[in-house]
Every structure is written in C-alpha cells, then in structure tokens.
Length: 359
Image 1: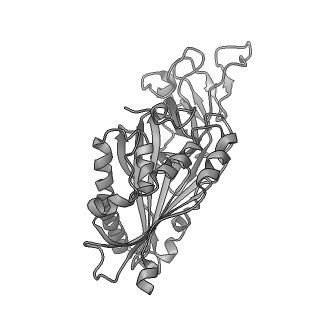
Image 2 (image 1 turned 60 degrees about the vertical axis):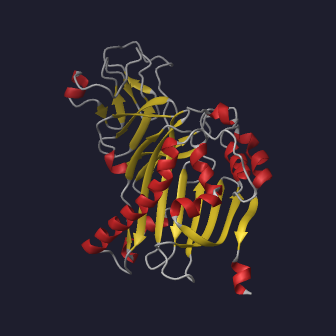
Image 3 (image 1 turned 180 degrees about the vertical axis):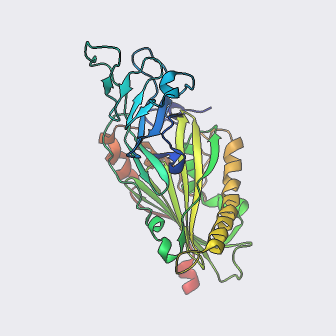
C-alpha cells in the first residue's frame, strides 16, 4: 500500500479539504464508530436539535471508545446521548459538541482542563455529512459546492441516491489522476472521435472539459457527448452532462488510512419540467444504475492496479504532471498553496478538433 510519502506529495499524510463521511439519513441518535484520516471518531445526532456531531472516539479519562458499547447502563438507560452531548459508557463523563467535558456525574471536584476530546467541523448538505479536515486545524478556506440541483425538485430534478462503494486499497492520488487521463476514454469507456479535451487549474479547483462521440450512447457521428467535470478540493468530484435528461454525477473519496480510501457515488437527473412522479423517480434510479456501471469501469482498474509512483508519460497523455502538482497544495501547509497553484493555474488543452470541424 503506497503512502503519501511514497508519492512525494508533501509533509502531511492526509489532505486538507471538505470530505464526505456519511449519508445524512443514516446518522441517528445512536452513536456510530467511524474511522477516517487514520483516526477513530464517533458520529451522532443530537436529541431534539438533530444536529450532527463528530468527536474523537476515545474518552481522555481511561481511553474508552465512546461508541463501541451496547451493555453499559449509560446505553441501556438512554443517556448515551443527552441533548447534543455524548456520555462515555464507562464512567459517564459527558462531552458537549465542542468536545469539552461538561459533566462528571460522580465528582464534585470540578472538571479537569484536559477533559476534552477533539471536535470536528461538520456540515449537512445535499443528503450528505461533510467534514472539514485540516492537519493544521485551520478553519475552512473554501466552500462546499452549491449542489443547486438538490433544491430544484419542483423543476423536475430527482435527488440522488447515495451508493456506498466501500474502500479501495489505493492512495487517492490514483483517483485524482483520472482528471488528466485523456487516453483512457476510448479503451475503457467507449468514447470515439474526441472533439476536445482540456483541463483548467483554478486554485483549489481542477476542471476537465470533454466532448466526444460514443460507441453506444450517441446515435450519429455528428453527435457529441459533453461532460464538464471538476473537483472542489481533493475529495469532491461533480460532473455535469447535457442532453435530453441533464444529470449531475458526484463521486466522493475520503481517506481512511494513508493509502486507503472510501468511495461514494451518486447521480441527480432532470426527468421532467415539474416535480417527478413515481415513474420519473424510477427512471432516475435506472439512469443512476447505468451511470454507475460506467464508473465501475474505472473502479475495477483502481482495485487491481499497482501504485503509479511515477508515470511513464508520453506527449499524447493528458497533463498528469500538472494534476499532481495541483494536488500537492492540499498536503502542505496552506501558506504554501499559492506556490503550487502558480505553477499550474490556467488552461491546458490536449485535443481541440472544434476549429477544424468548423472550417
């Protein structure tokens, strides 16, 4: 399993940015154990408020995991979560959402200053729970995507289903490489007659603009499938496809360990000009299934590949080198981000046959 150090990405093992950590409706008032970025955590909803809280898993008192318990009377009596706070099942120490202990039920000697656990910034949006991760413990430096289509159900958009794809035994660098990988579209995805392929590097965003024919999805040689795809930071990919039924694909990758990543997939599609009926929703789910099959073509390659610590790049490949430089900004102190951005910001065009066809 190749690590961040093996790729020479920077001084931090894990990247800075927004990352998906849960499907929103799967987070309840029952605390759940999760692990990301090499850390054990507890996620739960507050009672009454419904607020999502994410804390480090281990009580500083005696290092008990605060979610992995079913037999303690703290759990049986329903006091595991009180309001928005979490009680340790071992001794009942209670931690507020900011991680500070606010109650030791058997003591009248006050609460030690060290009685606190790390609390993480989380946001619930578009059916997902997002975590801001920063090994420098800084505030978010860029926003989540707008996910505007999520709130356009009255205009015929069907909200996505979140598909759990499990973990991949690879570093996320291998996934990000896809953004610059022009040459794989024909043999892997069935593209043909590529009209254009370009990447734009814009600070914390990398874009891929792609237009081509397709073996099965395009009816005539004059038609072109148009995809605009971009990452907002290192963990959230969105891809828009125009056509009879415009769609938005989302692929999220979140590091579990240094060299292992968890992946989710989702798709929203516009099926009508008004709120979709049951038939429209069914069609949207079928559309997502078909699109997921296409993504599985990439996923299978990632599952079985060896780490490409270096790429035997040829001129006809996309700009892998630029993509890897762009990615480094997230593995180094944010004070150095402009150093990497200045080396790649701008548009890199690999193929452009549009002018030739127009002539």
